[in-house]
Amino acid sequence: MRKFGAILCGLMFAAVSGGLAPSQAQTGGGETSFRALYKELVETNTTLSAGDCTVAAQRMAARLKAAGYADSELTVFTVPDHPKEGGLVAVLPGKDPKAKALLLLAHVDVVEAKREDWTRDPFTLVEENGFFYARGSSDDKAMAAIFTDSMIRLRAEPRMKRTVKLALTCGEETTGVFNGAEYLSQNRRELIDAGFALNEGGGGRLDPAGKPLALAMQTAEKTAENYTLEARNPGGHSSMPRPDNAIYELSGALAKIQAYRFPIHLNPTTKAFFSEQGKISPPSLGQAMTAIAQDPENKLAQTVLSRDPLLNSTLRTTCVATLLEGGHAENALPQRARANINCRIVPGETIEGTRDKLAEVIGDAAISVTAKPQRGPIGKAAPLDPAVFEPARKLAAEMYPGLPIIPIMSTGATDSIYLSAAGIPSYGVPGVLYEYDGGGIHGLNEHIRVSSVMKGREYLYRLIKLYAAA
Image (cartoon, rainbow, N blue to C red; front, side):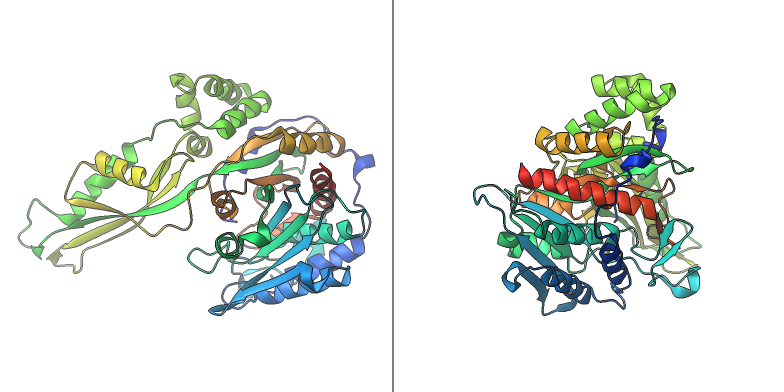
């Protein structure tokens, strides 16, 4: 979940009254079997170093087969070079062959975790004081388990209009490895072809006391791209300094990038985010959010919002220095100096255009600016489609009274970029509420509230049924 630390954090500004109505805290049938499925998935190690996503996929396929799925409806896929990084596609046929399918996407790989660093065994699901603890208990095996469980529950329901598909994939957490979502979109498109997809990236937020703040529907995300800045020089003996020094020249280029702000670039998602978030945020921020949604050129609103790193990143493309190296000896003038610039590019802008802007800002032909191989395609924003939003809002009004659903753009990244590039709009769905501080996602002692998982399970199951019947 490279998107974490993204725009969901903006929900901390919300101050919504109300909460979860106890009478509506439904968990649905089969909670015992869901807990067993969730435990099995979490306790299947799927780290890149020592885990096996293919085993996790096979175990989920076995559960689906036991629920009545035919072998022809289950595809466990691998490629020869990555036998442990496979995934699963399951298909529940609908009644109407002309109705486009609904795709459920979740990744089963997790970030590395060392037992010696954790309070508990990271690969044993522990329930303690109202929380589930384990690596992947939140990111993203909670959603993967909920989606798999939903497919099992749907199998026992009357046949619905739409076909529903489930794709459990590997490779989301590590750049540069085999990525199942990318593989399916490029090589097995027929398996996942759908009208739209549901994925991680949305959810919701709790305040530090555990009170719900808001729900989120992710419809866009930035593209992550890295650029190498490099200065070269003949060098020489350090006892005879020369004015053209590679380190100094690189430092000057970095200072110019530090001082530069890309232009404001809002899209339908971010305009809707600022408009809706402005209604529930403290006046000092809310007024600026409302103003920027109405007029992106409002200079005062730009100034106010740009002070916050997260909101600033929502307003524009951002680039920042993240790695630095230079010189080859203590007593020699540097022959080379390099820096890595990590950019998060808003939808509608390009990798090439961003590179050209960096070169223009630097304004020094002696500094080369080179784009590194990109992680994936440029993300395309999903439309703010009422057919997607309205069922989610109506169900939220019943199960999460008083909580708005706010469209968001992730400043990080998910596997939705591969689906959107293949022409499948992808939505990070609301439903599972995450901790105010992130709950240790990608860090130590990852955890999520038991109530968040169970309530999210019921919300997502019912939402999938609404979509599948439409």
